[in-house]
Length: 105
Image (tube, rainbow, N blue to C red; front, top):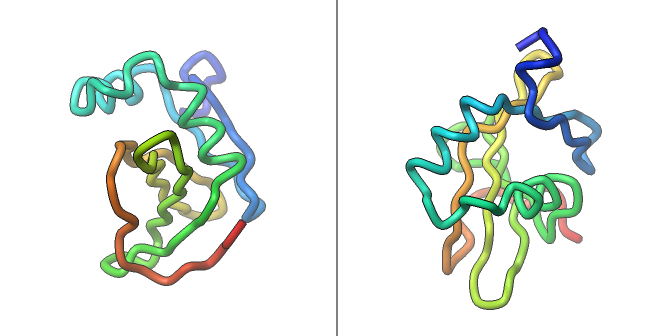
């Protein structure tokens, strides 16, 4: 993903690293989670201005960015590797998962 044309977005997080994704990868996420179709801006704002960030209890390299919406939480899941971040998945949920809170709002 070094070619800029393959980057759909690059968003700076409050933790000081950038999370990127490609149009193709975003399409895979929307295919798996069709409720996120048309909600790209919500995912970007969740990464940039989360209500809470947690470290995954199963994988310390995985960070879960949470943002409250009307009735649910939206979650953007990112992995940080060698200083670069990339979007793993995104979804909506009723509850926050277990894991160490590393950034409260």
